Image 1 (cartoon, rainbow, N blue to C red):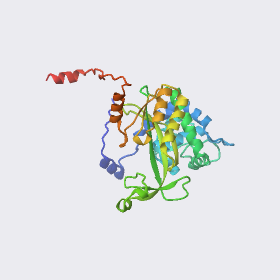
Image 2 (image 1 turned 90 degrees about the vertical axis):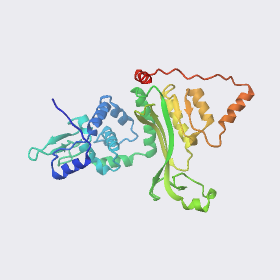
Image 3 (image 1 turned 180 degrees about the horizontal axis):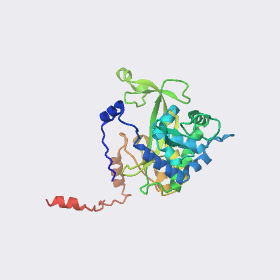
Image 4 (image 1 turned 30 degrees about the horizontal axis):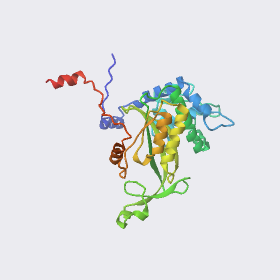
Length: 343
């Protein structure tokens, strides 16, 4: 019988590394990443994504599905630089999922150290490869892909695949949100703008501030990020099913509902049942459209200048509304709670 004991002791692990007591170190996430790519491979999802990817190369020595998988692996490890690709390949589980044709971990016959061997996809290299493809290949493909086409491809293909594989949760909960993405003050950030923000990173109008308030503000270069997320009531997962990245001066409200309508037109009625948005995305006309055309209920907070109680009283005085007392459904009490009541 094999017994595995796990202990979270960072100081102990660090001492073992410094003393040379650890011969081989494996990331815990390797198994989860292996299962993830095995599922994508078995369902031919990577092949489908590669066929529709918005970049057609005249000479394709390295398949596009490998580029997409490599980008996924980099993002799963939180790696923003392509220079970290060799490290991700060594510690991740992508190679385990695709087999020896892409790469494998081997033990050196002399040193007995674990190394990576990748045959590659062409015969140009005379040295042992440590990655399935060169990091410069990933960088060139990323630069050659138009940003707007990439976002449009994602917003189109991800919902299609999620519906095809029946991965949408039956609760139908979606969240719409918007935020600012701050970047260094460099004009080379195409499409970025400079705006004034307070100490909480909320955009403000200079004309409406006192001198004391203005001293706590600063100008920052930024973009606007709008997203549509799918989740469930137990917070077990979340999917980004649509997104927009553009000028920070564009108002997020019309952008979000355009994303919602595009998503609904692709997946059809019944997938989205609830849309949760914050107060900055209140739009009564869009709420009504989503309810009447798509049977989607929208949930939001109220702005401070809204008078929902006065509105309800006005409906009561008009006599045109039929009022009915609400009784919450009876909730079954678990047995262990019932036993607690009598002790």
